[in-house]
Image (cartoon, rainbow, N blue to C red; front, side, top):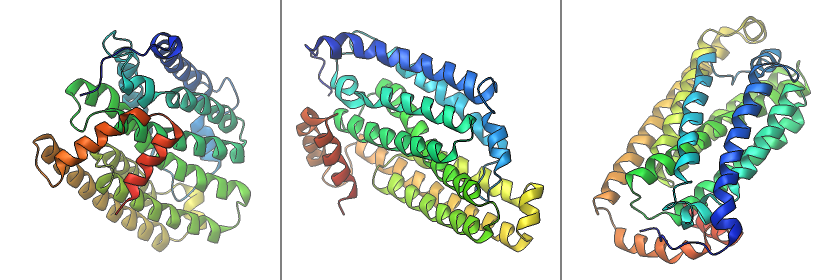
Length: 312
């Protein structure tokens, strides 16, 4: 179980949870003012329409932000509970990564709204890396069998966000390719195909190494929306690429969606076995995880978690 002993650091035990709450509020306000209102530059949808790609999800896919913000709101409130706020899961697992991610998200919103696409790509990579570090350090801090509250209020919000940001990073890369040269159709196609490959690899890691079914299901959601958009592309895409290209790519993405769904089923099945005490080396893995909790949140702890993730 996660230790409930309080952190004696004034910043860690008292200020960090409130800073996390402030970061959540800042993220909501910044997204509303910058990303959707158009009060600072263009809206996200206007910028995306200005740079049509072969890897753009259908508009409905972005509704997932409502679920992400709702679950991150649950996290922001849950981590304020006296029995939770001083635990390693918050102080070392979430640590500084959440606040860093929000600040990078603010930078991305500003750069994307002002069509500084290369700068937005820089911030998007930072968002992805901060969520990756948060995911790894949080899993180090939590027990192998987290409670229901921990699963819903800690693991679920960041799995949703991490999965969507993985897809958004690839979409941003495709926008960057169009931004750099709108006439280089070969580069646009190559970037889209490469993004499909990376999406499949992400599903592989999420389903078979992270054992995160939510992460994989978000990729299913994003991939389905991309394939749907390709099946009836906007006029500029139809004018640039013949139907065999868009339809073929759409079918390929649907294959990847099926693969991601299987990865999600595998991860869910393995999670059930681990929770019930089944599977090989479960007890050894739990002891190993408990022995590493002291290093969570630090660069060394994140590095150790990454090495464990990639270990065959």
